[in-house]
Length: 302
Image (cartoon, rainbow, N blue to C red; front, side, top):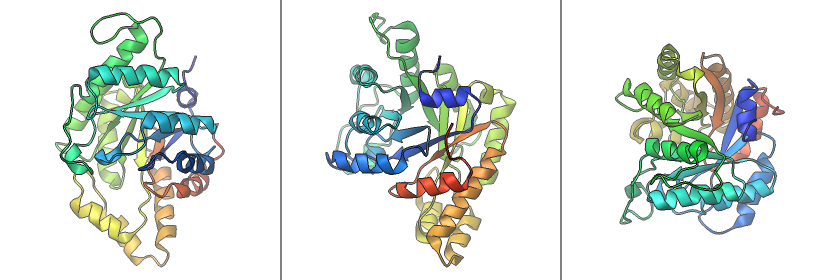
């Protein structure tokens, strides 16, 4: 029996759609509810980011519970940056107790990138160790220390992978480690350089990893040509093709062109062997998600 709607969609052989919702830098629950109502029905599950880029925001568990109260299914992102193994396991139990059924395990961006660069980091575990810990809690009912628990957290377990970081060949090796640690679905860094992603997926398929884990390709609509150029030149671990920059720079309606590019990317990754869905990351532009999903022929959801 599937643990979550997302798992049900993947097990059923459907092309999965997840999308991202960024919690506010405040305790404004209505902000989260408004986003949830606008996006309801346009994805199988919605990631709620965990202090993304090390900037303080509403907790992912709290925001996840709010969107679930609106009828959406949450994927709780959980980073190792801010919690030791005691707090991580505690939050896994708390999230499960509140009805969260999906978890995405991340190491987390270094705090120097965020709005509290002087903060102390933790990194007691990394993402691979967190994956293993959650799977052990779920499948064997045991904490990291070996102690047995009475009720297990029944989570669908996910991770991320970046095909655009270096060294390139290490990315598939790292993905394999995550799969062996317990990952059941993977959301990739946004695909803005299709050639590199095809090469990555070819290696994934050669190693048979696509049969052990559901790979969802990251899709990011870029709202401006300036943003695309900035990401191309300044953001580590991200590759933006010259074609995308040029199309946005030459477009009369840049936002329309951004949507068109995202729809084309969804259709293109759908044809790549081993890809079983997409993860839409419209950072601070979530209202565009229904348009992309509809134009890509992925609405209504199964």
